Length: 123
Image (cartoon, rainbow, N blue to C red; front, side, top):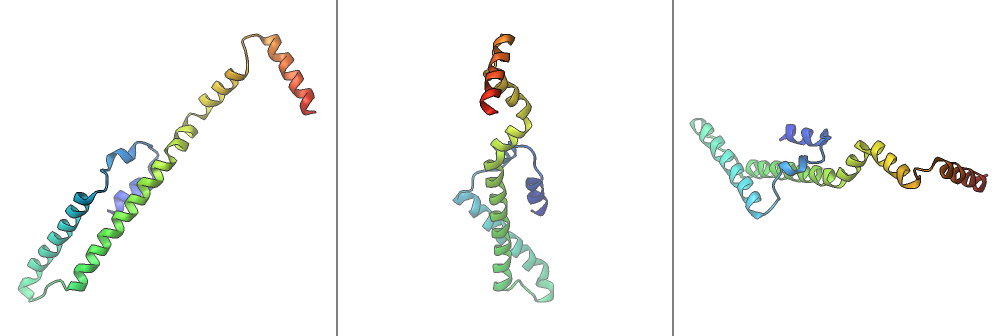
């Protein structure tokens, strides 16, 4: 889980969020069942020693799973919100050139006169 969180944190790909499924009741239920399976396996492994995971221990494992889910969801939301900014940063040279092209025409003399007029207004 920690590797997954780190992969999300250092991700530079705005499409990385598409690797994750939507969080719904069924997904949370599968995670709870998985944690219960881990608790059952731990109880099975500790049975020869007459030990088992306490209720508090089981609760802690569920809390850890919940914490990781929340952390991953926060990173996915952060990446989703920052995706347009990352896209702009990667293509800012192209965006700048397009902006300049919209402001200027193909007529160099007209562009020079416009620049001179703009310079006079700024001075």
